[in-house]
Length: 161
Image (cartoon, rainbow, N blue to C red; front, side):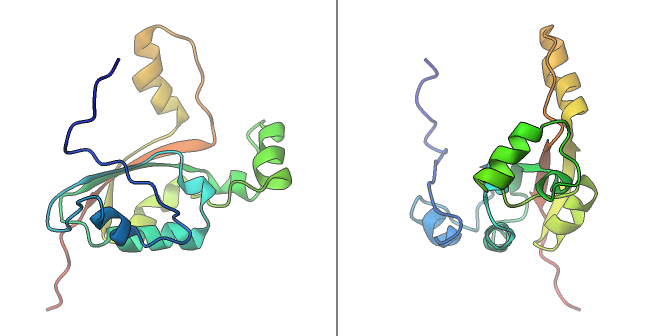
């Protein structure tokens, strides 16, 4: 129905907790001297903070101008201080099955990414996502209050003076 993936698109499966990101990417043709676009949608909440930081440390090697889009769950949901009216979901993913581990506060995303050489260029919460993508279709749907999207660009490396 949608056709085949373009030759420039690579889908890479790996265990973020144990595999080396750059090795896995290189096995699929990734070269750090070329700009790339990383998509990490619906992943970060399943990882430990250590794995998220290891992933960003690996992506530090990306060429300047590379781009990344990812989603994240709010930290206040992960730590239980705000369940956003989703008591059942919280019970399932945090208490009973302990599936989700990592979250961020929207205010800290820019600094978190900057630590790894990435510049936050855009961030969207549920209201903006609905306004941008749902309302133009004429549908009346809500978006989850706990998941946000972030878009970043790899900065030029800083050279010491």
